[in-house]
Structure formats: C-alpha cells, structure tokens
Length: 314
Ligand SMILES: Nc1ncnc2c1ncn2[C@@H]1O[C@H](COP(=O)(O)OP(=O)(O)OP(=O)(O)O)[C@@H](O)[C@H]1O
Ligand SMILES: [Mg+2]
Image (tube, rainbow, N blue to C red):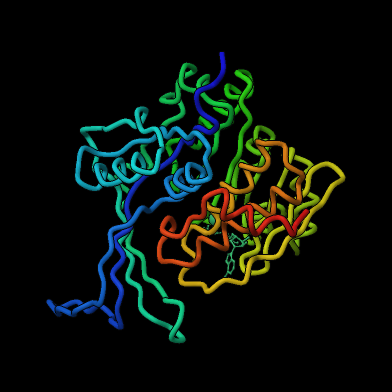
C-alpha cells in the first residue's frame, strides 16, 4: 500500500498573540496602548507543518487541542494551508495553549520580546494516541518541541521503533531544554534518522565546543545531522560526508520559526534523495526566506521560490 502522506507530525498546536508597540506593561491597573495585535500560527510543530505543505509535501498532523476558539483557529489555519487535520484530537477536558508575545522595538529594527505561555493542551499528546494504522499512512515521522511535549517524551523511543518497523523514517528537532539537563538523548537519538538541532542545542547535547565537533559526535548516532547556525547558515553530515551552506542575505523582520522552516526544506531534499549540500541549501533558503515577515508562516516560500536560491549550492 502506498502511504497517503509524506510526513506525519506528532506535535503541539497553539496560537501566538503578538502585541507590538513601544510599551512596557505595568501592574496596578495601568492601561497602555499598543500599535498592533496579531493572532498568528504559533508552535514549532504547526509552523513546520505549514512550511512542509507549502513546499508541496503531503502532511498530516496528530496532536491535541481543546474545543475552543484558539483550537478552532489553529485547525482552520492548518487546513487552509493543506495540512490534514483529521487526526487532531479535540479533548473536551482541556484548553488549547496560548503564547502572548509582547514585542517592542530595539535598535530600531528587530524587536525584543517577553513571552507568557499557557501550556493548556501543549503537553497532552501521548505516544499511544499515534496508532499503527495512522503511522502506516505516512513515509516519515517528524517530532519537534520535544521539551514542551512532556507526556510524549517517555513513549518516544518506542514510537520511533514502531515507525521504523512499519518502514517510516524519523526526524527530531528538540528546540531548547528549559531545564538545561538534556537527559535521555543517547537512547532517543539511536531511533532518529535525521537529527536537526540548532548550534546551541547541538553543543549542549554533545558536550562539544564548536559545531563541527558536535557534528562529528552526533552523526555517530543518527544517519544524518543538520545543525542550524542562525545568520551563519548551517552544516550537515552523514557518514564521512560533510556539507556547509551560508544563510541568505535577506531583510530580516523576525526570526520566529526560522528553524522549523529550515527543517521542512532540509527534509524535503533528504526525503527526495537530493545531495546533502542541496538539501542543506533548501533548508537554509527556507529558513532565511521565512524571516522576511513577522511570525513563522507569513513569508514561507513555495518550492519554486526556494529552489531559485538553491542552485548555487550544487
Ligand atoms: N538572521 C538571519 N538571517 C538570514 N538567515 C537566517 C537568520 N536567522 C536564521 N536564518 C536561517 O534560518 C536557519 C535556521 O535558523 P536558526 O539557526 O535560528 O534555527 P533555530 O535556532 O532552530 O530557530 P527557532 O528559533 O525557529 O527554533 C538558519 O540555518 C539560516 O539559514
Ligand atoms: Mg529550533
């Protein structure tokens, strides 16, 4: 049977409410006015899902939200972008999570942010909710926001094993560990085919002092590793092969979700057997291009646009 989906994402979904202005909030019933209020697609998993769908991949999402306006907003946004949401669980006993982001200008260009997050349903998904029947419908399983999805963590090594047994490949982007303990990775990374940390995460997990050394250590565990290095670009390795690409010079508005957009581009190339450097180039182009507008989804490139920037990578 041919799988219906290229990628299944087991993830969290919640909106970001971004309030922007030259304002510092004060308690004591002080009302201040902001310049803009935007409700946007938040959560790493959802931003990744939209990026992958925009590139033309067939994407399905499994996660938990509440029966409320924030959940409905996220489901509408995902489905408008072509992501299959039929496996999202609407749990009547929980509320969809929310991040409120206060953004004010700094240096006149990029904003500095204060973030208040209500977890709600963000940490509710458990591995048992991802059935064999659902896994069988996909070629690849992607997990991100590992540290926010605390109920998913204990079952993840077994989930990756089940995925492998059914012929899927797997990928993981941890994002930052707020406790900075980075536990459980030895067991987990053995089940991850494509590992996609950023530079700080790669250094923390490997104990190495630079990205190249981290790559050498991490690629002993996963089949392919790509490390995101912000405006310096990215490096990747598999077996004896290493590749490096620069970031694109773009007019950066905000870097929210750049890592998730990178992941979608890199996995597009990797799943389609592109050369390592070309897959890395597509990842980097998708990451850079996504920074041209506020939020993680408004400047996501389609495949045609992203590929135009990749040809120089080989
Ligand atoms: N300031 C920037 N200018 C140009 N490109 C950028 C910039 N920041 C990020 N990128 C591109 O996006 C890719 C991923 O970004 P980054 O290294 O910030 O990932 P991350 O830390 O995982 O992001 P996230 O905050 O989404 O978790 C980079 O490899 C680069 O290609
Ligand atoms: Mg990241």
